[in-house]
Length: 397
Length: 211
Image 1 (tube, helix red, strand yellow):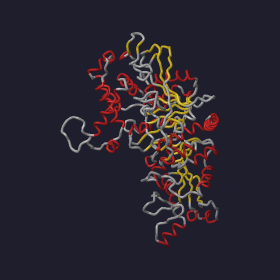
Image 2: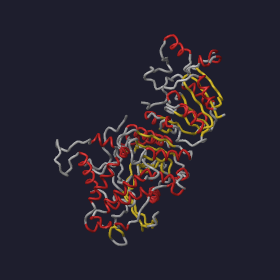
Image 3: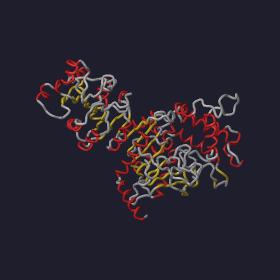
Image 4: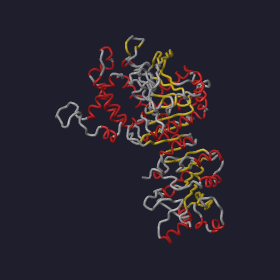
């Protein structure tokens, strides 16, 4: 199968847009104006019908594809799937991804300066929800002149946003792609999130969320939070394959507490890498948004009724070894969509990579994505447009 | 094992012919499920010729993208786990085409079909075809044919039956046979087929509903 031969991504730059409205949030907290950081890839066509919105997950941001520089370390988090000739083909589609409010990569969040105090918001930043994110993304759509998305796509927490789009703004998307997601978290999942939150909040450097003024961050808590997260994003099998009981650079135990097993050093490395690029308060907010999401809470726990406003065509994808967002959670979504007589296709991809699978180039998965995106392109006759565009392009060269 | 439960038969010449018969049994504009839909060609045919809506079900991952390319809704799950995906009485027709013989629990699946749909359509290789009988009676071996190309030890077709057997089962389950046709894989009509379908039919097609 055609995996992309070269993985040199195109150079991109983040953009920013300021909204001056007072935003009243689902938590009834409010923000006096907010900024969204976003990136775009490909070109919006004249009809404006080739736009795809990608929603990011817990630790993601707006840098979903492309690269910032030549260092080889700045590829977007979903660059394996998005780009020219990739399953989400930027020759055909205009792809948009924004950093959610509450984030820490350019959109207004706890580490941004609160205009009222001229200090970082810290824990004064209100709790935000999936619904709030979808609302702010709709404002970005207005700003970009996109009245209807060809598709809204997301994995994990991003899938929840895609689903919420289909409920909140059914007329503004034609397709909804929900990957490795759930209509609500279960107790086990909320439990893991709270372990992560407690690791951060009980770190002496947390300072009740106002650690910015001390020039440090609750790094030890963040490290533990990321380590436990990482374990839950992988499967037992893949951890066994990757690390087994292998020891690090030695043949026998030293009987001490330095990292001796490969898996220990891997998790510590992942934890350390994370503390330098992610804000602890944002991590707390994002995990709460995950816990709160449950569209059926407003419809007597009837997901079918919750999804009744939706009119989009759906693609739902899950992964066999994903125990954090298990296939059964996706099947619940599919059943509710079927009960609403909506068009839905569902792929349950066999993979050892656990929840992380959705970020990877797995043949059965990328073939389904490529076909589905092709179907979207076919419906709007984007394939021939792309051909015309590339012919035009070659003439100019 | 059991990854691809559907279309475990050699059906190259057959498909267009049995698709036409099935199409005649499906109401225009109705809601249809095709269980074991393969690459989705039957449902695609029904969508274009009869304007039906509905879903295909397929387990084989290699078929998912082909179904999507064929513009059908495809749901990936194992039919041996029942039809819990679908609400009761929510479809007009539930089709099980050349798949029954590969199911672990054919009885449960047939009952599920009429829980979900108003009528069921089942097609299967008729094991009582004379060539199969000949291979057992004279050769003393398990039959291997164009339709059933596997040896006894590697066949996914674990629940083979005859046209008579199927009629008896429907009777036992309280189903009414609405239509029943036996055909040759090449689509040719013969007198033998009409008079002795259980002897000359290679493929059986039955439409049934609740009594």
